[in-house]
Structures are given as C-alpha cells and as structure tokens.
Image (cartoon, rainbow over all chains, first blue to last red; front, top):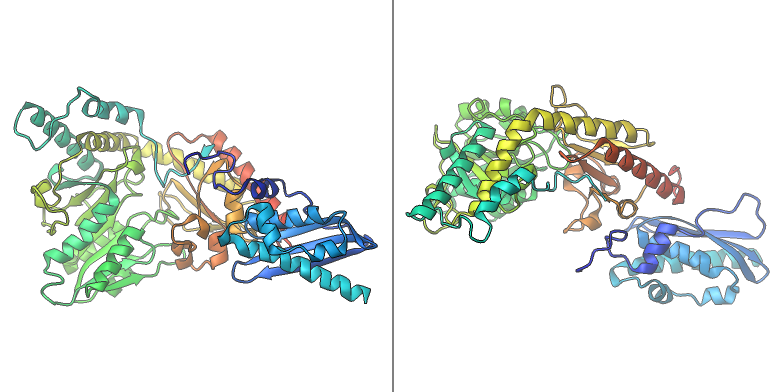
Length: 134
Length: 396
C-alpha cells in the first residue's frame, strides 16, 4: 500500500468503511412495533454476533434494523442487509447468499466468515418468519 | 491525527537532528571512524563524544558502551553472546536462562532459539501488576543458571521491575544480569554505578533519537564477557564489528544527553498526561487498567509514559477502526503480525477477548493536555457507540 488514507488508514474496502462508520439502520424497533421478526447468528471462533430485525408488511419488508458485535466487516454486513431488505419480498430475501454480500461489499477471502454470518442471520430470520406464518 | 504511540517510537528531537546533520549532509564530515587520518579522527571524536553522552545517561563508563543497530540487536548480542562465551552449545554443559513471559519478542525469540540448541529457559509469569519480583527470579535460579534477562520497564503496560533490588542479589550468587532498558532509559533514573547490572540494552528511537541505532552496556568491573555475534574488523572492542554509522551514533548521543537533562521534566510531563487521561477514561463503565496503577515515586511503580486499558464489551478490531484519528497501539490480534492477542495481557490473566479490546496510550514531549482531552472524548464516544451497536447483553 503506497497511499494511506488518513480517514481509513486500515484500508477497508470503501463500502465496508462507509457502512461501518455510518452504521445506517443500526438499532432495534420500539417495543410493540407490529410485524417485527428478529433473529441472530454468531460465529464462536471469531466471537461475532449479528442480529437482524425486519418489520414485515404482508409479503414485503417495510424496514430493517441490525445490531452487531464484531469487526467492521461484520458491522457493515449488518448495515447493508438491513438497508437492502427494505422494500423487498420474502422470496428476494431467500435468494441473498454470502457470495452476493462479498461482491457487494468487496469482502476479502479472509473475511468470508463475515458474509456467511450475514447469510446465517437472514436464514434464521426467514425460518422464524416461516414458523410464525405456519 | 493525535499521536499517542511514543512507546513505539518518538520523533527526532530538533536538537538531535541538528547534531546529526554535519555527519550526514553532502560535503559533511563523512570520514570512517576507524580510519587513521584527519576525516577519520574527526568522525572518531564524534563517536567517542556520543559514547560519553550515552554512558552519562545510565551512570556508566564510556568504554562500557558498545554501539549496535538497536535494542533487538543489543538483546541478541547480550543473551547469545553470554552463552556462547561460556562455551554453549559446543561444550555440551547444561545451561539455564531465567527470563519472563512478558519480555519483548526479541528476548523471547532469542531464548526460544537457544532452547532449540539445548539451553533450558524459565519463563516467569508476572504478578497481577505485570512485575516479576526479585524473589520470583531468585527462586528460579539453579546451579546451571548462566543469565537472567529481565526488562526494566514493560513496553506494553509500563510495569517497572525492581532491578535495583534484584541486581545485588544476583551479583552475590554470581549470576549475570541482562536488562532490556529500551523503555526505561530517559524515563526512569538509571545509575549503573549503584546498580550492578552486567548488560543493558538501549535504543535511540525510543528517546527522540534516530531509528537504526542502539547500544549495549557491557560492564567492565567485573568484566562481563561476550562472544561477538557480528564478525568482521574487530570494531567495538571485538564485540560488534561493522563500520559505525557516525550520524546515527551522534544522534543517539545527543538524544541521551537531552534525555538526561530533561529526565525529571519529561517524567513529570508524561505522568501528568497519563493521569489526566486515566481520570477521564476511568469513567467508562467496565474499563480495566492493565498493569501498575501507581507512579515512579513509590508503591506500585509505573513508567510515566504508558497507560494500557481494556474495554470489555467492544470488539478489538472495531475499536481500533473506530479511532482512525488516534495513533495508539492496539491489543487487537488483527493489528499484530502474528494474529494473536497480546501475550503480555494474556500473561496478566486477561482473556483473549479482553486482551483484543485493549489500547496502549503512550505519551511524549510533544503531547499536549488538549490532545489528551480530544483523545479521551473520542474514546469515550466510540466505546459508547460500539456498545450501543452490540446485541450482547450487558454491553450498554
């Protein structure tokens, strides 16, 4: 690395850095908000936890929120999924895979587990959605 | 950018820079200090003046100072050279070294290398303050112990080992003592006329001198004997061959002279900054201070220039990344070459996660109270932000 960016001296990919620093969609829905489903996933080895919460209206996500304990990439994955989900159908959510997250956020190979964590959290949430619908 | 990493390295002091220039500038005094002509004699005189300046900082004789490339080389020369002079490993006799788990990597790796050649090494665990007591060292001594190697000040947590009390006890038992003083010189008063250390390592760039130069103190009375590790023209009394880097050596001399003149003022300045930062940050819920909590005046001795804190409930890499405007040393595994959390903090009993979420703040002459206030505000805000982001119970 020849040029060191004072704002991003550790050289995270621009999308990861922007989402980590801004953490859009961070937080939880107020207690009692209708249609909220949440679930979390964790990676014991890397000691990270990602919790997603989606407010679902019919077959579509109205709004997303996330909480994360983990590295900047984990936080960025949470922020990205929470934002991406808004306005999408449950079927579209089912099609989101770790590879898509890696591509969208330029997640390097050594951080592939952060993308898998995102996929796992979303999968857990959809399972819960299915259970509630059943 | 707020620089609070003076234990990693310091900027060159302006007066040191000025002192070096005549030996570095084109058309300057370029002679080889080993040459026997006018330019060589001038360089030699500058080298010897610098030797006096380094010696004066630690209460040594100029002839007891051997120039090296830095503390890593000094530590290698001291430890390997001592054993080799005693015939290790060729004579096949058992040999034992006592050191601690919290030494700098260059001491630990040197010891591990010697273990592969057959030496036995005891790595002592520090107490809860990060110190290795003289009693613990003496209890580890065996008839085969050739050398004790112990740092004066720990580079991560500022723990101060009681070298003043340890050294006479080892002298009585006829065991050589090597001290890595890279973090102690210029921070604590060192008087080797009063403290019978045999070998002591120094680094210039930790005290506002240039990088790439250091020294090893080798006691003359009684004579500490070393086998050279760098062979060549017999420079430095045969202990370290190689043409001396006159400008670096002059810089180290000037830096040591300035450190001696400013010892009390620097210590007061740094400990004031350390205490001010701790006073601000101790309000963060759950924050842990690693290492001693006192000062150099007595009690739990602490180096004046270091403050090491852990922030449970935040993830180490995220903590580091959340402070891009703060140049501090991180305990985060991802910031180290080995991808392991700090072995020093783990030796103190911190778990991996807490060790990861640790920051070492270190202070220097240029540090201002305004910078301390800004740094404190940033750390408080970012720790709170990361905890608010966390789904783990008890993070907030």
